[in-house]
Length: 405
Image (cartoon, rainbow, N blue to C red; front, side, top):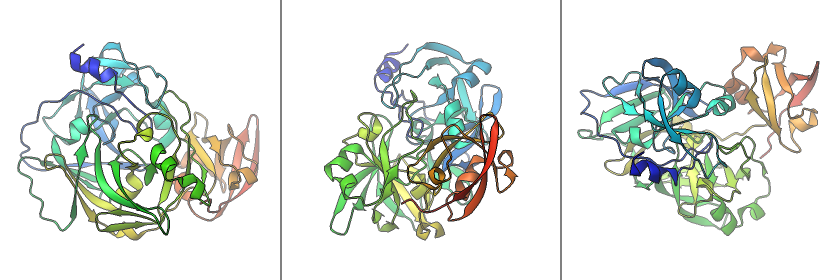
């Protein structure tokens, strides 16, 4: 094990929503002969690209600026013949999920010819896949993204990788300065309007892998007494650390987030209540996620320490949140497992319980729907007849959706 890898053991902090890790540097790639256009799938606001591990693939990797280096699912790694080194403890988001260092193994992205990078570690990612309704074989972050100027076009679902040595921006977007910390996370300056009388200058980590709009960190939430001031919040469902423990927090809204001259109105905000890990950071005040980022075309330019934002037509679209009170996971059965339920919600009113299996909506089998489609359906004020399986029995219940925040 190298000295750099030993150093990395002490600073790993991986959570399934907000993966954040530290690693060793990579060799710079050769200049790109032309821009590489990589198509992606957007699943639960996460960017998924296809990749190979050795000769195994195509596989699905999350592109996540909240991660520093390449992780691979441990079962995928075994089947691909990846060689392991020592066990790797993980701290911060969880209390110690099993993981291994990778001593020999690499990945390459489909559509990016003649470019590979080594894998750093392997950990179980199956639970992450269940939570978003898609198989996940790996995660790539800073050590990959920093080799290029990365253009992210959410509307076309494309990553355009520009040669960082020759790239010149000629668009009309707005450039924000970035600061990169030792973990590969980058932050931008912003303003948050907390209420009619309070506007605060903040530093926000930009995390492509965070599906929400903005999570305010525990210390900032407590210092500003934000939960005391919030008239309406609900429990933060579905947030778990790498060890499986639930991450505490509430979900509500604030009036405005300003990114340069761009105003994001009435976004849905998570108010973290955790004691350690990235969301307990006192160096930054929040983590900006894809529900805001996807309203822009992004140019991530580490070499010039800038993030360029070009607004799209989606910038003015309202923010909606789940109206069912259900947090669902993919199930081995023919539907979706109810993982958690919000108090005083439509799901609670309908008598649905944790552990139930949702097998049909308005008579349509759940197996014919993706988890993403169901989540989108449950963000609208509608009423559905939901078929629920509990043990050996099934019953139909009325699920009347309503805004919870």
